[in-house]
Image (cartoon, rainbow, N blue to C red; front, side, top):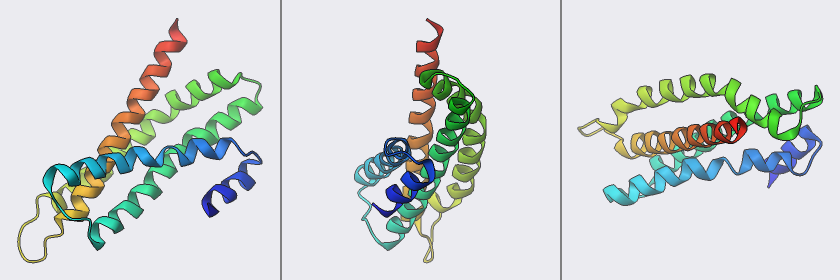
Length: 147
């Protein structure tokens, strides 16, 4: 609630922060599915990974929303501004997400006494879900804009 109110104050709107807030469940969906499929527990390390996922997925959504706001201020229509923002911010989002996923892969495949597979699995699966669902929605909105 606090994050929503801060974003509402920053954007001077009650609706624009919803785009950022609604991006977070995409990341959590991947984590829940992966933990359920592997039977891993939801422990402290998983919860630390979930906090990390929330921050990164919100950052990606803020990038798109902020750019769409700028385009909207320049006079573009709402749908055009959203599609343009998604198209132009897709590459930086993909690069950040891929680098993050590749950086966390050693935690997924770790073994031994100090291995924290739960944090690696939670973060990698959540970012994969968030990234692919974001790419799918960007691609789908570009299909609608073409005709």
